[in-house]
Image: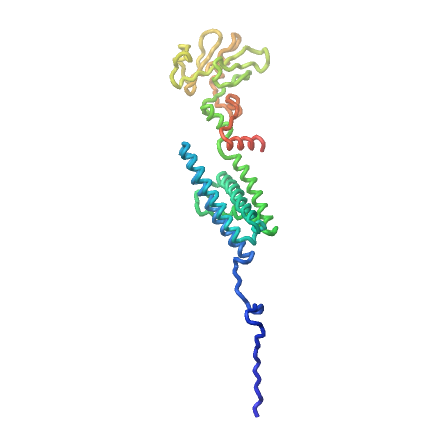
Length: 340
């Protein structure tokens, strides 16, 4: 007699419509904190990498000059900035679990403004470092977008939940800020170059005549009509000497060239046979004339004019007006150079 067969049956005792906790179910990645973190960083990367180039391109409108172009460019910059903040607001609204600021409308707006503002400053610091160290990076569009977006991600990471993202992001931004400050300081024309440009002069305009045993009481490089006075290193050891510089780049015409002997000067120094002792030479379209008191040796004057050298930066600075910044950028760079 065959044994009876028994069949086990699973009886579903759950009520219709109730959840089934024992059954696996699909979860939307965007509903989890990890998923929102990934999407937020991707969105910030794209916006942070592309928007600065848009702002930089629009800012070139200021170069056109004129009130209408200035107003139009400013308006376009405001529109782009507001558009960036609006997109960032929508992004943080969709990824509110990532940051403590995502819980309220005011917090989300603050997050968007912080990411836009601090991200722009980080991009400017990175651009200064890249310009000072490796300008070629800026000519590679894909690389510039990649790096610029990465800087914006650091700002977003600084505003996330959890120290494990905030701490390294803060450290990286602090290092970047320091490097950007020093790179900004070292970029652009030097303070001396700015002073030369304001005075409409070149470095080659400044030459120094060295007189053995003498030093200049003032150094004006020819701007003083009465000349630059040289005094003995040891008081009472010799007479006074005066250097006079005459620019003849536009011709040797009165009243600058009253001495007919100037017309016959060459590149070799010449002693004038008169009293007081006097010697002159033609050097780079300028006449350098040394005149001494009656007791000064004419050969000393002659020898001094054989070695005319270009002035050093510190010497040039003595013959220029004080530094006067033309814009806030030059003022900030000058302050950093003075205090760092």
